[in-house]
Image: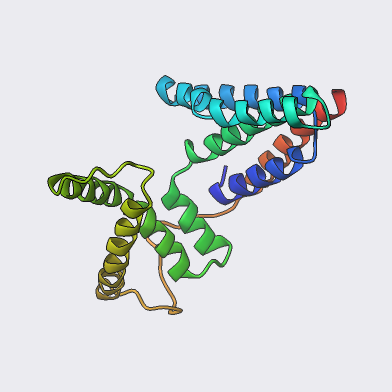
Length: 215
């Protein structure tokens, strides 16, 4: 499926389930997402993290609703399963979609400005460098006898300052590679939205309605 159509479908499903207070529906969507990711051969370790990481915030939602909510424990379980549903829906998109393909199709097929598409693509490509920069800042702080935890605001403030310094270098690099804002562009890799993409999107949206009406 075209990445932009897949993103649109994910957003529509996410918005729809936010209005549906139905535990079986949430569990059905999670099961379908799990099956899809298994068919795409996503690593088992990544799937395990998708179950483990949301446990604490989901449990917090459940406990707060059970002990302090006014709508009973059922809405607590709805919120508990809904959080997992959002996580698995997002993972179904992010783990099976190439960000470069998404940027290209948004630019070529949905008239997204080139500077925004390539800017987002650049930001994603900078993630490994940002991780290294954060590690460098922590090591430099340790050499001064200061321990910076991952949740320290000072750590991220320094990382943001480093990223701001990179922004001018990135803009100069894009210009030196021939990037001209608002100028006509040619593409080595051309993307297209086919009717099968819309058909697949419509089919999945219809399938989501089935458990909503059944349960």
